[in-house]
Image (cartoon, rainbow, N blue to C red):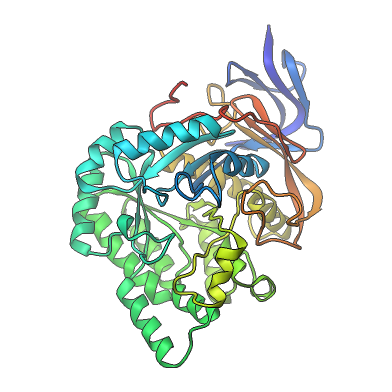
Length: 456
């Protein structure tokens, strides 16, 4: 028998740990994991000598900005950035124009993505109350609610800051069985802290960042949400988990059996204050949560309190981000992450901050489970989709803005030295990135739903 693809001579990260083995792929699925000479002949062979094959990364927090804001990013450039970073499935967020808040707008977005994506994709949708069942039927991977509202990207049309409306929405979402992602924020506390800062004449972008990440803004929202999660039994997934008191509350809730999971993204605890000072608003809100909270995030990532590491890939043009120098309270902020977050985290593996096994759990297995796709995604086992990232733990690189796939054209990691890089990204047995060059064809990515792939 000749199969489509064989990866030979490397080590493979399996649920039981690293194994010196190869992988055979046929018709987009894993058909064999074995040592030589058991591997069959193949139409294409990858020599993974000195490298490790891990499950393809699943990013459950990507802002691809299409439709409506395609000067920042679109499904082609965004999924190319994903492929460059070892991501095989990226799930898009609803804050576009028009916002994805109905079955109709989801169908429109699915068509746009299918024409351009080079990796597999899915969508989160804002749960407009009377649209919740139809959104589930249309193939959403889950729902996304912002509690923070203001200027774009925090669109008031997809925000719920009323606790009664939040309760009714979570009750309705719970009936679908799909996860509900929430960006926690106590807007009343945020507004009051803002007013206090302005009264002292503090209207600069650093002060804004400090107000935005204030522990009270997050923790008071999180504790209320956890009580609602317990009451409704909704599958709740909390985003931006960097609040010290919020982490403690999530840990207690999990011990009490509440159906909650949590995510953190790199900009809060990986990007440093030095980079904030050097790069300006492009690195907001890096370095502003303090070392105690940074350590709490690391501890929570390692002990399982935080389940998922996702990117919050949030591209804006340099000109847009730099409007924070004039009025940060209305300026967009956020940064592109997809291309470099794996390399950044592999460097942290080399430092001993997190094991490779745990890193792949929070980047592949856990997010796939959260969206109901494991073990189809996020796993290397017979019958799973042949989604792999081949990594070289010894390959070094200095990150620059010279060559990035994201349309916004910059990275908050400019100037960083990394050790460890993805060298192949393989989606359903098809090579979409090789040695840093994205070779996947537009439209080769597929929509992924909670039940199965939807064919073109």
